[in-house]
Image (cartoon, rainbow, N blue to C red):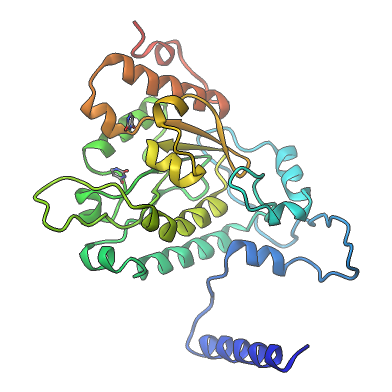
Length: 309
Ligand code: URA
Ligand code: URA
């Protein structure tokens, strides 16, 4: 290897030693980097697909509740997927076949991402205006994950997503599905409240640049949580996750795919607050029924008939 490479390696090792001496036990490493590091070095230029061995010595990930836990065969298939999929870059490609982390590793990796997000100042205007970074809330082993747009004033003040009026409606929707806020995971495309200098009230849509700057945090959250189903709340969430700007009224109710994870676009709860028509509520509810079916959740007759005329 080159001298430059040796120097870089030396510096990296030195840095890690210093961190260890200062008491650090974990370092943030991107999940895909971790997967690449656990892969054996190539022995020939034309490498056949490597099948990832299941890890020994890891405590099993705790079962997910209250939805029926992941089928073991599916989990095995995911572990055995060829590594070529790791290199897929399109949002619609299959999810990377990163080995499932043990419970402790997953917690540590999640805490590391959160720490980086809380310290982020990449959008100087947002960092200056924010009270809190709103990282996400819920169960990091959730099977169902909701993604919104960006924190509003209430979320900024409390450091938790979806706690204002729209959030209370989202919470009711989740409860009507027979779930709780604590059993799902909730996050936003943007972790900081879009600043509104000179405005007396209201919220601003995140800019494309802000979304592009912040989205890696959400990608890491999804990679770690590995939900079975994603729900994108409103057009901005769909745009952030899928790059689609086709319009939420056309996309809602139709399954999409975020790196192999089924994604249901639906209306943002704040749209339902502005538009009180029963027909719109029923549309969102029909989307949630599809999500429940996908997760093989029990659905009662009462649940089926909500908002139906
Ligand atoms: N709207 C969002 O998109 N996210 C929140 O967290 C709150 C309101
Ligand atoms: N129109 C919007 O702009 N957003 C929604 O969530 C629904 C309809």
